[in-house]
Image (tube, rainbow, N blue to C red):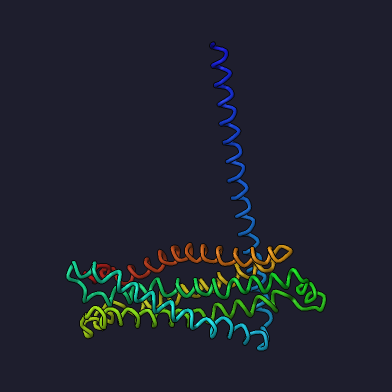
Length: 290
C-alpha cells in the first residue's frame, strides 16, 4: 500500500513538473520573441531616421501620403470626437448634478479631451484607418516582390516607402488631435447647454478658467509620439509580412493591435513625465476644481 501511494505521488509530481516546464518554456519563448521584435523595430526605426536625415524625400512621395493621412482622416476623427464629447456629457452630468457641481462640467469635459481623450482618440483612429492600410500596402509590395524590384533599381525601400509615411503621421497627427479636441468640446457643449440646460456663461467660464495652455500642450506633445509609433510599427509589419494574402491580413491586424498597445503604454509613461513637470511648475494647482 505504501509503495502504491509513493508511486502515485511520484507520478503526480512528475506531471506537475512537466506542466511547469511547458508553461515556463512557453512564456520564455514569448519573452524572447518580444525582445527580438523590439530590437528589430528599434533597428528598423534607426535606419529610417538615418535615411530621413541624410536624404530629403521627394515632394511626389510626400504629398500623396500627407493627403491620405491628414485629409482623408479628418471626417472620421471629427465624427468620433463629436460623439465622445456627447458621451462624456451624458455620463458625467448626473453624477455632477448629485454633488451640485454641474456648472463644472465644462471644465471636466474640456480637460479630459485636450489632455487624454483627444490625442488617444486621434491616434486610435489613425492606427485603424491609416496604420493597417500602410501595413497592407507595404506587405502586398513585399509579397509581390515590388520591394525587391526597388532594390534592384538602386532605390532604398525605407527611404522611398517608410520616410514619407513617417513624416505624414508625425506632422499631421497634431492637426487631427486638435480637430478631435474641438469637435469633442462642441459635442459636449451641445449636450450640456442645449440638452441639459447648464448655464452657457458658467460652462464657458469654467472651461476657460480650469483648462490652461499646458493642458493643451500635453495632448499635442503626446500626439507626436503616437504618430511616430503608428508609422514605425505599421511599416515594420508591412516589411516583415509573410507570404500570401493571409500574411498580408495578419500584418495589417498586427499593425493595429501592436500600435494600439504601444500607444497606451506610451500614454502612461508620458502622463507620468508631464504630470511631474506640471506639478513641479504649479505645485498648488492640483485641487483647483474643488
